[in-house]
Image (cartoon, one colour):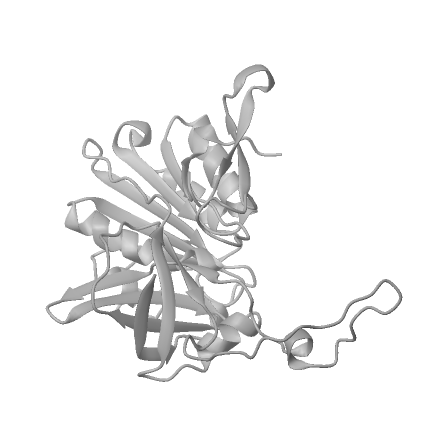
Length: 309
């Protein structure tokens, strides 16, 4: 558990913000790992008091302990980036405002204190023997892929990114203006966060307001069809809505392409204690499958491991 201070909190689009948290030190991290953030002021202390409860008269929800709209559990966020400097470590988190916890994050100002638990989970693996990589991301699955793009570039991999959102105003990326966003789904250096690492990006929107009109797996499949020997030289990495990852995973399994998926689940603890984030994987005796935990065994799994219901 680490005490962090807000270094910056920037608006990225209508729904997303970029939070930079500074800590004195932090363990080594890998793209795909996450942290658990406590979305209340860590310095605030609440008065505790007993409440009478009888069989005939349950307690009335009339005081703050019951009626306050406040997050009780920590919220999981994938790391969108990390910067190490002599004075400490800066962690980047991209959040979408959907409830009380993320609304609290949106209101943070530089210098505010934040409690961070992590790093948690297992990250993506960069394969030494394969020179090419494709990143497929949707919505809130885009942030960890920015961190991954940096790692792939550092390893000398030739990477392309495919990012999907419902509409242009929900895109948590900044357009460079240096390259057109292709309506045909062709990757270009149009997204600043990926272009910074030399990664060309194709953008898909459900409503056609930017780039490819339709779903990002379709744009990715179109591009994949033009690649020579993808199974021998390409690794695919995906994160986003489950339907998107299922489509990408099945496509890759059918074509014999290695595919790593970063799954999303509701998590209470993030450390394997609450057992709330199970996923089915192949193996496990008579049934042919067993449960594993997204937080502790993942969140990154090989596509061929997963059993989709």
